[in-house]
Amino acid sequence: MVMLRLQKRLAAAVLKCGKRKIWLDPNETTEISNANSRQQVKKLVKDGLIIRQPQIIHSRSRALRHAAAKRKGRHTGHGKRKGTANARMPVKVLWMRRQRVLRRMLRKYRDTKKIDNHLYHELYMRSKGNVFKNKRVLMEYIHRRKAEDSRQKLLSDQADARRSRVKAARERRSDRVQKRQEEMIAAAVAQEKKK
Image (cartoon, rainbow, N blue to C red; front, side, top):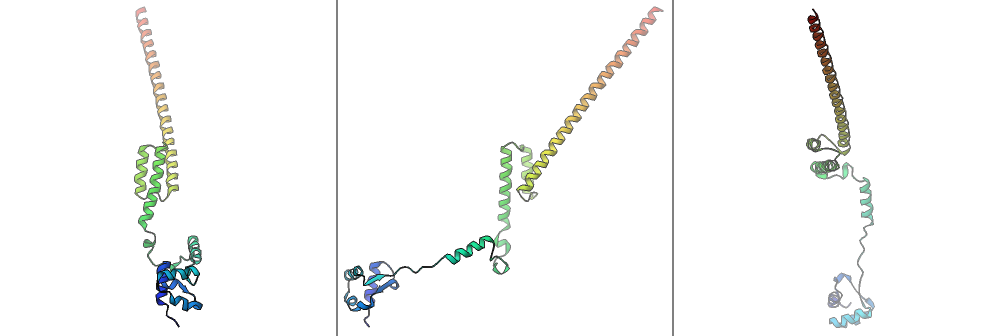
């Protein structure tokens, strides 16, 4: 058996790969052993006596299939968990996400004039105080609050109208009473004059 260590090293350098990727033709060992320069090795490569073997394929199909199953929620039971619940999905991250969602919604409502600055500030502070657990709850609260405010405004307007009506009626009545009194006084004075 001829030692072809030199030829394998030279071939690896010429073909720019590792020695484990070099294939030397076992039927042509004598001819290969005569090659002791890079030039001769290049000629052997050209003739096909020395070949660079292809890369070994490392299939990702199983890994991809497993990842797809994990996206669906498989393989995530108690036995597969290593970290604590807080390490896997921190409470702080959940809080930041929720605050960003709520604040974005409040900004949008304020910009579209659905809520005024006073209500915006109040709801901002309430969301910071952990009153609303998600966007739907906040939206419902806003609708309820706006309906309540409009009802209050309607009631106050009605009360104002009633007050003004009563005041006008009272003034009219007092005017009538005063007129009647003046007429009675005038009649009494006229009667006195007749006597």
